[in-house]
Length: 370
Image (tube, rainbow, N blue to C red; front, side, top):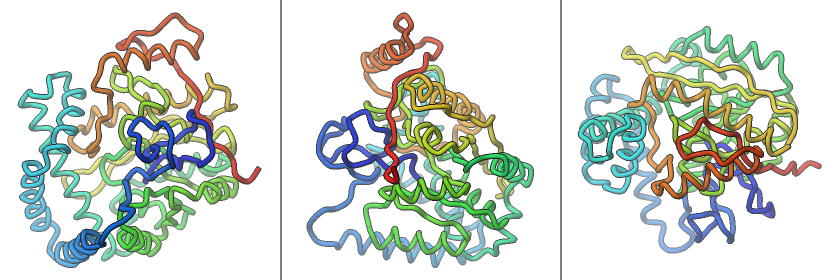
């Protein structure tokens, strides 16, 4: 799931979560792309290999008892950690931020290895979910957390569940949909069409409706029908995103959720899952966030509120926060620039890169139905 589609024709300030501009890592000019870059030309050999490997892994690991599957997955994740230096570097940098240690510290390395293992477990759980009944989907997730979602949804003009890559969002979505609720997820389309379609069909069988990230019209439709829309906001640092403070340092999150809430009257509900040792999932939700308008300071306030609400789950289960892109800028000067942007919009004296989190600038989602 991704946080915001990115809208062709919008100005540079438009809200988007993984969507950057093609050909420019800073999001300046060109056409919009999904969070995962697609292959635009050339043979489809790699795509066929990836899809075949996914199908084969799903068939084998989905039929093995869960415990042996996880043990095999742990060995594979350790091998991937060693063999993929770019992702290892990104995960260690994020781990170092959480632990407040240098990236080379052994504690950052240990946490990074745990993240790789938890990502593999997430994938294996995804292989087992299709073989479970809807009642089993419901049973593995905390009932009080689901009840909290229902309470907010029943009182709202549509509900936007915003979360992180923590625990297992697929399991949580399947548990909510298993109760018969209208659950939609905004999905980043993978680099491979066939793999995306396979995942789309699996989730439909669970009662989850997947909305491709480009279909902004459908996003507005489900919210105006007072349905539930789930999306994730931690697709990595984007220089043109909404400046916020996360774990005490300046970065950006997409302003799309706040802009959508302002445009539709929907309520934002920070929501997360944490995996328990027994394979079930604890869940919780923060305070509902309502966005009164698309005024820059209001969008900034709401986006910072999302960051603040989701911080505790990162601290509680950092090994389950499976993000493989940098979540903070590497250059201190960029952090200072984000703080300055925040202060300028808030009309306050310039904030510092380690200050107390002033709210910031607008990036507004356009409603294609108006």
